Length: 389
Image (cartoon, rainbow, N blue to C red):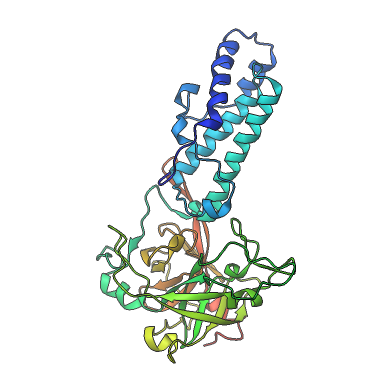
């Protein structure tokens, strides 16, 4: 896992237990509890013995989720480490050498590490990477490819922004029972302008129940989406070059003043942005036009411009996998936590076709399983009182 110091202390006792358990199992009769349980557990193909458990693969057991948010994780890491933790826990449970107190302590610690890993996977949405390699590219270094030329991407990029929490909430949470949480300045999602001051994104960006987050509370209660929205802003023109992550453009933020539409069964939200220096966001960056027909060709190419994990603007384009009345599905376009709300643009028409909201794409043994998906704009128009043809 990039950027992580690896954890040794929490598994030192475990490896001592493994050494003793290994010797013990060699002399165990076929009818013993150890041999019975061990025979029922299928060792993952990538691990054939205890010696293959690389201690450097165990991350630090960080319990604070705000620290976990800063870490990165790949699908390969996630799959590998999950199998290793499960295997380790299984062997601890069948161990007959360690003292009961230490054994219980190490089982709890290993489960805690596995929980941290799954929390991180949930936050980063690693399952939405459709392959072992991140296919997204910095918007400024994107080059012509077989799907979409650079000129198209550049022309569509300006209205895309990153939704994030404000860096300060002022005196909003100063009463007894209030809690500011720990989300100051944290990225929340992606989205795009659809009018002079209207910004569309994913509805769950305004949920207080997202895993890995601790948003503010008022009088010990969770905030409603309507209360939450004005605590955020949208940043435009946040772009960089991936080689050294140097910013090459000045980002500009606009305050969210209100939540004007929130999907019920469809995961979308529309907020109104306040002006900056007397100018509306659309006057500076324009906005994306939306499709006005239910028709879409199954061979169409889609393009998603996004701010994955709060990074500077990135893009990937790929083919449409399938669609139905409400959703678009794609399994060759990577998305991550922070990509929620990103516009799905149809290359054929240049129009906004959908709003990305879910990552269900992952890779197992080299095979892509599942797909990422977006709610269709036409489905939104049928229920929205704001977005209409």
